[in-house]
Structure formats: structure tokens, C-alpha cells
Image (cartoon, rainbow, N blue to C red; front, side, top):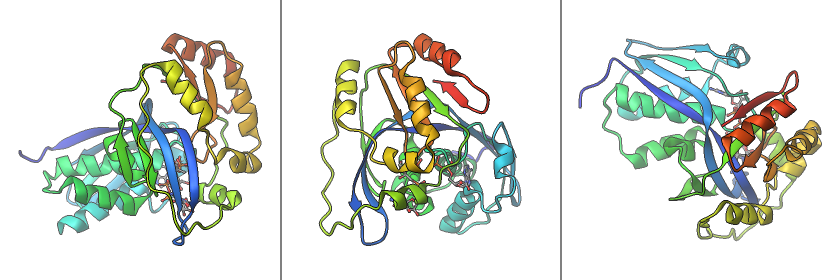
Length: 286
Ligand SMILES: C[C@@](CO)(OP(=O)(O)O)[C@H](O)COP(=O)(O)OP(=O)(O)OC[C@H]1O[C@@H](n2ccc(N)nc2=O)[C@H](O)[C@@H]1O
Ligand SMILES: Nc1ncnc2c1ncn2[C@@H]1O[C@H](COP(=O)(O)OP(=O)(O)O)[C@@H](O)[C@H]1O
């Protein structure tokens, strides 16, 4: 295969439908277990062949990253180039459509999309295992974003079991315009250090939406409490989503503050978005 002159990758929002914190590890990270899906809403990353590495950012949330010298996209580019022992030559364009520091892994999705895009642009001989290790060194959420398919995630984020089939459902994502730091939420949780951490449980299977909702009702998001202490508006968002017609479940994703509603159809998710839209809130029915 020949190297391309330019490639494009979609960086979909990651949604933690459930998130169990199994304990704090001695390295400071937490052992997690999470049912992860990807929405049709996302950022877009384009990579053009160039001699040097550069990045331009556009999109509704682009300005929020303008002062960020160490964008995850550039870090991913430099890391892959160093792994390959080559110059990091590419002009990258990031269309930043997802809110920043919002529990839907926008930065992680961008980093993963950059690794995928540059692998193609440079026609790089890099194995899935190498890419996964590079991804993990960029962030706990980056490995699951590499494939961007439904998964049962375990450990720091590196143990990924694919969910082959999920019942059809629609998601409404709502962010109240408040940035929440992932590190602060974990600190507020104050989970005890666990010497013997549990190994991964078997990935669940669901043949109907009712079965999925039933499982989710028994498996919540352990970070919701601490995130609500930091940003009480999260409670308001969950209540607003939960009150919409057809909503089967309303919950926070990741470390927040983005929350989601699950609906049987996209029409219902779009109707819910119209019903709760308000200034300063970002909504995406996907
Ligand atoms: C919480 C999750 C759930 O999917 O999502 P987000 O809320 O970020 O979207 C992720 O684990 C976030 O992944 P990511 O955002 O890549 O985390 P990193 O950059 O590696 O780490 C940020 C900080 O979060 C904490 N952290 C993260 C992952 C983990 N398993 N244990 C942790 O304790 C650590 O304090 C770390 O310093
Ligand atoms: N391309 C990027 N998109 C979003 N955030 C980025 C990016 N590059 C670096 N960051 C930094 O990473 C932090 C976490 O961002 P993000 O991945 O959006 O959080 P979360 O996973 O909680 O949604 C942000 O506060 C920002 O400073």
C-alpha cells in the first residue's frame, strides 16, 4: 500500500454507559470496569503530507484549546514518529466539535484518530499491539478509542473486550458548559488502595434494549457522586434528561460533566434535545 497525500479520521465521542471503580492501585491509577459505546457525534481529524508537524484547530470548541501548547494530537504524532524512528511530518487539522474535559473522551478520541490517520498517511509498519501501547501511554482512555467500537473495558483502560452485538438505541448527550477535571473527580472519590485487585469479569451480553437497561440500572457510574460535588449542575442535567419523553435511562458519562439519555429511537432523542435545550448547554442527539 502507498502512503496517501491526505487522510481523514472521525473521532467519535466515547460514552461510559456504566463505570465501576474497583479500587485505587498503588501506582495512583484506578482499576475500572466500564461498558463503553461510541456516539455518531465527534471531532474530525485530517492529516496532510508535510515536512514538519503542525496543527490547526477549528470547530465550536476549538478556541478552548488555542492556548494549549501540548495538544494530545501533537503528542500522538510525535510519539508515533519516534516509535517509527522517522521525522514527524504532517499538517494536521482538528475540527473540535466536542466539549473539552467533559467525560466523553474528546482528547482521547482525537489522539486515537491521530494514531490511525498517521499510520495511514505514513503507510507505517506498526502492529496493533504497538499502537495499543502507544495509545495507553497517551491516556487511559486512548486504547478503547483506537477501535471506537462497543467494549467492556477493564483495568486502567487497557483491557478491552469487544461487545459483538448491542440492541439498537439512540443517545442524547448533554453538557452544561462546565469543565470537570478527571484527576479532581478521582481525588474527590477518595477510593481506598486495594492490594488484590479483581480480575476482569466476563463481558455482559444483551439481546434486547430492556435487558441492557436492566443491567445498567444495576451497574451505575461510581464517579457521578464526586463529580456532582464538584459541579452540582450535573444533577440538574440528569433530572432534565430523565424527565423527557421516552427516556429509558439518564446518567453521567466518565468523570463528567456530560450526561446522556438512552431512547428507543432517534426521533425520541431529537425530541428530548428540543425539549431541554437552554443557553450554554451543548446537546447532541446521536
Ligand atoms: C474517567 C474516564 C473513564 O473512561 O474517562 P473521562 O472522564 O476522562 O472521559 C477515563 O478513565 C479517563 O481516561 P483519560 O482521560 O485518558 O485519563 P488519563 O489522562 O490517563 O488520566 C487522567 C487522570 O485520571 C485519573 N485516572 C484515570 C484513569 C484511571 N483508570 N485511573 C485514574 O486514576 C488519574 O488521576 C490521572 O492522572
Ligand atoms: N485535542 C484535545 N481535545 C480535548 N482536550 C485536549 C486535547 N488535547 C489536550 N487536551 C487536554 O486534555 C484535557 C482532557 O480533555 P478531554 O479528553 O476532553 O477530557 P474528557 O476525557 O474528560 O472528556 C483537557 O482539559 C485539555 O486540557
